[in-house]
Image (tube, rainbow, N blue to C red; front, side, top):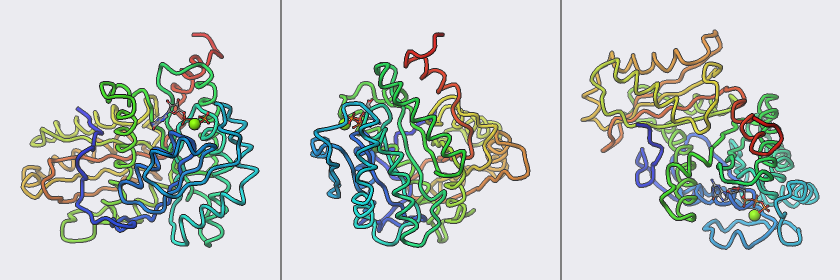
Length: 369
Ligand SMILES: Nc1nc2c(ncn2[C@@H]2O[C@H](COP(=O)(O)OP(=O)(O)OP(=O)(O)O)[C@@H](O)[C@H]2O)c(=O)[nH]1
Ligand SMILES: [Mg+2]
């Protein structure tokens, strides 16, 4: 079974304080709108410190831990109208750039914007914010293409047609930007999967858990790539991670591998992880041009994994990707205290989720099944 609930455990032991988690890529995060702000706050709670939130109302910010906040001058919210969110951010782009500069400082490798698609503030302001984040990267003399990415959630089934309409328009625009190399990565998270997974929890708890898992999964690879010691058997290094982050649409998952003693069992577990663990259904894995598979286990548990089972795991992953000569598979094997045998998989360079887009158009009441 695939699990992405990394609630109570962090895969690799880490120190905390101001990005003092040892990470491979210095990540700055801006949360847009309420849901986006909550996801950014989950990064703050993990120990990331270059984190800020932007909204049209300070009401949505009161429950957050992150102290870096910018409230746009809109009369009390965007009222689920993305045009309002877009215009507000455009009108205040200088102020938002100053806010990013103050919050991030000069040492950023990658900016991630987080947004829950469907409302007005986040969904509209994400587009000007992409440009503003690129301006910020230029201002610190960094490459500005493919160093600004977006984590976006898609609405759950019960949302209204208007919410689906807002979300699908923005999703198509984001996919086009990813395709054009303007943003990378684009990480898509299906809120329906969140509801299915945490549906029993109260509404507040469910979002909190989901947001924590989104941030934690993203962070795990950043920490794994920063491991550089005798615990590393096969490296997955900072350059590997940077290259994956620059490969467009990205999905990831994690599975505890219970049965690792035979090559067939481990290959099957990896295939299941990739199919079910990707955060949005309908992503075409066979078009993926870049992937990372990192096997993590305690020393004792790793002893139980035969070399041919390992080869088989990476082989299974490799065969799922685009067979072309440009396709890269980064592999890592890392020892981490008290970890069951766990495979982390990250796949990028994916095509747009066409099936999901078509479903969303139906939910928006635009086309009929
Ligand atoms: N994953 C996740 N989704 C959320 C969270 N909060 C809200 N959502 C979803 O995000 C969608 C957009 O809502 P908001 O984020 O409140 O919208 P907004 O950007 O603040 O826009 P306005 O409220 O219209 O100004 C909704 O359909 C919610 O279901 C959250 O913390 N996590
Ligand atoms: Mg809101």
